[in-house]
Amino acid sequence: MGDDDKDRFGEKLRQKEKAEEDRFYAERDKEALEKLRRKRATGTAKAPEHARNQCPQCGERLTTVDEHGVKVEECPAGHGLWVAHHEIETIARRERDSWLGRFFYRPKR
Image (cartoon, rainbow, N blue to C red; front, side):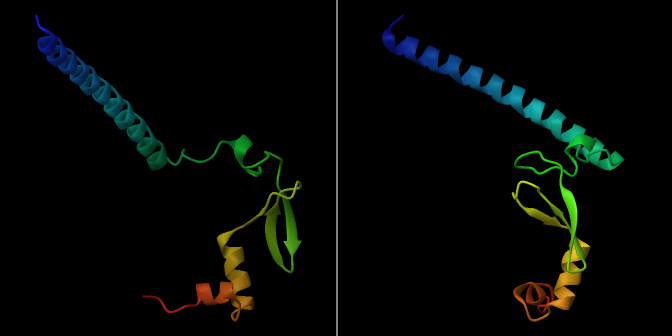
């Protein structure tokens, strides 16, 4: 067997291994997606209870603060504020001339 034959054989072997690996990962991804679809369909795809109301950056428990009549969730370490959609709409109605109000009340395309 010459070097050229060994190279072709080695290349075919690598292609076969790659194809088997691709099949393995495709099947694994398909199973994971199906599992997520089932969870979504049953409504169990929510964040775990221990992860709710926690800062995604530091894990501290968020505190609810009333800012000018709007409730926001605030990280006690100062990593951010989280505002519910209905609260943003409240701000937008009150601040129609601000960038936020213009964003919510711009003409729909």
